[in-house]
Length: 88
View 1: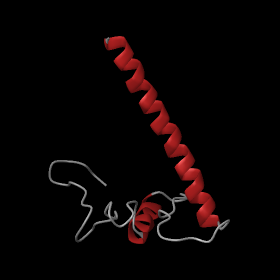
View 2: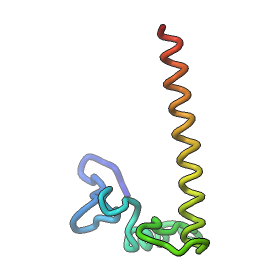
View 3: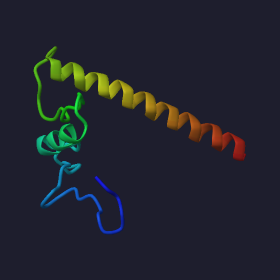
C-alpha cells in the first residue's frame, strides 16, 4: 500500500482491508490475502475475534497477542511514570 498524497490507504469502502475498531480491528481476510500476494512466504493471519474454545489454536494466538500487548502497555506506562518523576 502506497502512502502518497493521492494514494491514502482506506479502511472502509472499496479496497478497505481493515476491520473497524468496533468489529474487532485487524485485517480482513481479503486484506490478508492481498498482503500475502504482495509478500510471498508471509505467515500473516487475521485477528482472532469473537468467542473461541478454550485451549484452541485461536485461543492460544489471542493469549499470546494479549501478553505481548500488555508488555508494551507496561513499558509505555513506565516511561510515562519516569517522565513525570523527571518533571517534578
